[in-house]
Every structure is written in structure tokens, then in C-alpha cells.
Amino acid sequence: MEFRIDRSSGLPAYLQLVRQVREALRLGWLGPGDRLPTVRDVVARSGVNANTVLKAYRELELSGLVEARQGSGTFVKAGLGSTDPGVMAVLRVRLVEWVREARAAGLDAEDLDALVRSVLDADGDQATDGEGVAVR
Image 1: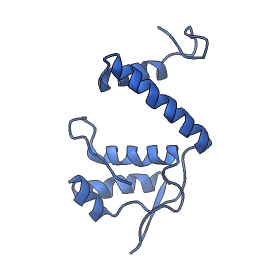
Image 2: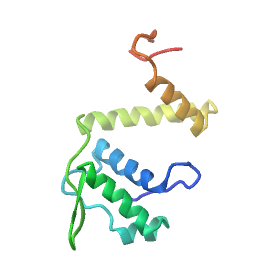
Image 3: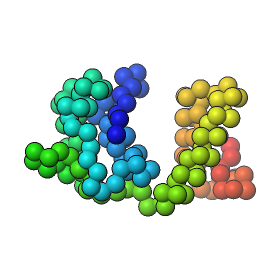
Image 4: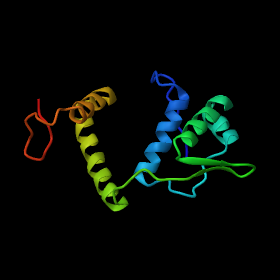
């Protein structure tokens, strides 16, 4: 797993690490028994402080997702995704196509984020487009 830290996001680096591990678990890219990168490797590749990585790994451990093994590293203890990985892969391909279409229409990352959040945050009693997606 390769971590990416966006220093301009406003989200603390340790929370970015936590989010990326949780996303990898949901997408099936990480599963029980997989080893997370060592603190030293994360520091070397991302430039974050070792205490930041330790804080992220502690938070993941407290949530029951990983476990630290003395002298061996940090390992995934539990998964998050309940959807079939094949279904996730198909949906991801469709999402990639949608993102490309949106970018071709001139939307940037913030526009995409706002659009997705508006759909995710929509109330259940709003009108839908026939496929269950709320429209405003």
C-alpha cells in the first residue's frame, strides 16, 4: 500500500492515513492478514513525522481494524467491505467512466466532490431520477 498525503487538503495527515486504510479495506485492496507498511517506510515515502504514522496506526488499532505485533509490524485484523469484490470492481469501472465524462464537461475535483456529496447527503424523501438517485 502506498500512502498519499495532500498537505493542502486541510485534513490532518494522520486522518488521511486512516481514511486511506479504511478505503483500501472497503475496496478489498487490503484484507485480514495483510501487513501495513512499516512506520519507517511511510515516513520515507510520504515525508510525514513518525508520530503521525503511529497515531494513525493506533487509531486503526483502537477501532479493531489492525493489530500491532511486536517486532513483526502492523497487520489487518478485520475487513470493512461487505460487498462482493467483483461488484465493487464493476462499479469502480463505471465510476471511472463517469469521472472522465464529468472532467470532459469541465468539472474539477472540487466540483466532483460537491456533486457526489450532494447525492450522498440527499434526504430519502426527495424526488429521484428513477434509479434511486435524489435530484434537486
